[in-house]
Length: 190
Image (tube, rainbow, N blue to C red; front, side):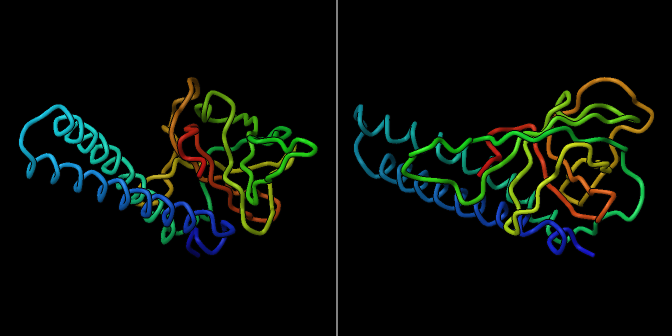
C-alpha cells in the first residue's frame, strides 16, 4: 500500500505546496533575470539580477524537496523492518493562544523520540507533519522508523547505534499501522 494511502494526505500536501513554491520562485527569478538582461546596466538592473539568481537558487532547492515528497507518495509502506522507537508526549509547534485572531488548520507537532536499535532521528526530537484526519502520535506509542528518500523509505544506518540523524522520516505506529511523516528541518513545516 502506498504511503499516500496511509499518511492522512501529508505527502500529497507537501509535494503540492513545494511544487507551487518552486514554480513561483523559478518564475520570479526568470522574470528578474530577463529584466536584467534586457535593460541597460545600472544599479537597479544588477540588483534585479542578483535577486533573480537567489530566487532561481531557492526554486532549485524547492524542486529537490518536491521530488522527495512526490517520490514518497507512491512508495510502499514497509511491512517489516525499520528501527524500533518510542514516542514521547507531543507539543504543538505553534500553540494556540487564547484570543488569537487566527488558528492553523493543521498544526505540526514536536515529538520526542527514542530509537532503541539505531541512531536517533533529530537527536531525539522530530517535527511531525499534521494529518488531515487529525490523527496524531501520543506518548508511549511504539513506532518503526525509516528515513524518507526519493525512492521511498530507507533503513537508518544499519549497525550504527549511536549518533543523531538529520533529514526526513517515515514513522509507522505499531498498534494500528498509522503512518506519520516527520522532519528535523523547520523549513519543511508548510
